[in-house]
Structures are given as structure tokens and as C-alpha cells.
Image (cartoon, rainbow, N blue to C red; front, top):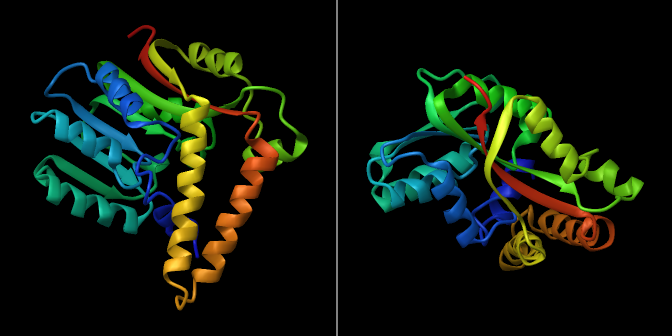
Length: 245
């Protein structure tokens, strides 16, 4: 199974591909959207769950999403049709880092997708290229809540602590106007949903040739979460505005 297939199955029970509950998602979107008729872009949108929720809550909003997973985008199109928002959503099947838009956006989102750009700073730079004057960026990334083990760093990368994240953001010319640090409950709920959804699919489809691999991936992920990074990993979402310009 490739990464996209695993992700699609693992997020069946937690469509937001980040450790955030529904209230946190709603509050962040409310903070990020400057007006009812905003134009929104999600870089690395996956199944476009952020955009679907925004479109459902704001009938004048228009949105575009970019992702490399054709399966995730197909699911997003089906969901958009079911919600009656398909005519206001444009989806692009391509690499978010190389995406060129036809126009600027009032809001740019990139939550849990900094890996697609090569890190936080590169994601900030990419988002800035798409932002209209006066626009806002909603970005989400991991950080170390406390000193990680070498194994955790090898697994998740040299993320830095929350002050280092904020230093990167402000040094790149952004000012935070809102934010949310995921709670322990949100972090744990996300991991239980990720491993549980993947394992449940494997158990429900024992004859599928990918079943054994899916169950093994779920088991390995659960062990890594519990034994390697649960006590040191955190996740922050920030609503940012350019400091000048």
C-alpha cells in the first residue's frame, strides 16, 4: 500500500487530517475567514475537509484545493456533491509546492502539510505567493512539547519547540492573529482514530491482499505513538497575517 492509500483509510474516522476536534476547526476557520465571500486555497488539501466545512458554513465562499492524491480528491468531489457545494469548489491534482494559481486568495490553508514543501519556512514562502493583500494564512505544524528522544527526532524530524516555531514565523514576516495548541485529548483522539480506522478496515476485509499490511502498519504506528513520541509531540495551528504589505 502506498502512503496515500494508507492515509485515506486511516482518516476514515477523523476526516480532518490533524489533531483537532470539530470545535477547534470551526473556531480556526471563523478566525481565518475575513468575510463571507472570501476566496480560499488549501495547499495539500487531502480530502478537502477544511474546505468542505468552510463552504458548508458560508454560502458565498469559493474554494480551491491542491493535492497529489487522486483518490483523496475523488472522495472530496463526491462529498462536495453530496453537500451541494460542488459548483463552488475547484480541485487540482498536482504537487502543492509547484502549484501556480490563476489569481490570489483571501485565505490560504496548509495544515499538517509542511512536509510537502520541505518544512515550515518553505511552506510560509509558498503560501505568501498565493495570498491577496490583506489576506490570512492558516497553517498547522508539529513541535516538540518537551525534549524528544533521538528515535523521535529520527521519526518525525527536528521540529523544534513552540518558541522556535514562533521565531520562524515572525522572522519570515508574519504576525499571529489567532491560534490553537492541540490538547492532549485532541492528540490522543487523532492517534486512536488513525490506528483504529486502519486496523478496522483490515479486520473487515481479511481477504483483501492489502489487509495484512494495513494491520501491520496500524500496529507499528500505535507502538511508535505510545512508546516514542506521545509524551513529547505537540501540534499548533496559527492564523497569520503579513506583518507589512
